[in-house]
Length: 288
Image (cartoon, rainbow, N blue to C red):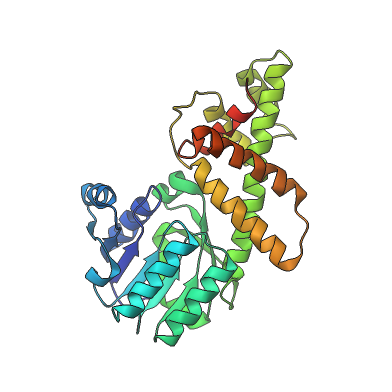
């Protein structure tokens, strides 16, 4: 059981803010951390007091990390160690950063007297808001038990193993499939249009059958919109995540040609100015 009611939540982006709100609503004293003033202002509007750096946050309590990239995780860990706020607390890395990055953070934080749980999530903004995320958790059994109460408001924790990196490894597999399925959905809808069909009709006719997928059902309706479709997950996130998948695969000599093809599409979308657009806009790389 969690013994400390204090939670420091690092990373107040589109998914981090509703996650922090849910933890606060469960009775924890939450302080947000984000270097961007706009993010801190949004958090404040959502009822979460926020500061600019880990050094300004409470020096005790669980730290939940939802930064965007491995580099940002490295910077956070370095700052925490430098300012002596790393020790005697559990760090829950919920970002998608890959196995190597979380193992590196784990070694550095453990050397400084901290404990680390590897717990990336899947489900996006919608499920973060409703508390229905799937959490791929790995780490020492005692550390997992210590943060169970703080994670419970966020969704369902699936215990992967006791080694740091195992949670990230499952998330790598998850993001392989997500990357491929989004691009496959975009390619199929664009093919239907090229064959003279209406994309909305294609989505309606095939979405509920054997050719359907969760990504087709979720992203498909936004693929029917234009460039200004609501942004729930960006092309840039999948440039990053598909890159982590490719890197992890290369490290173990796994052949992932389908992932490589999907990654090319996300890179192409980013190169034509869609990096900050919803990831469904990868469809624009197929449309004339």
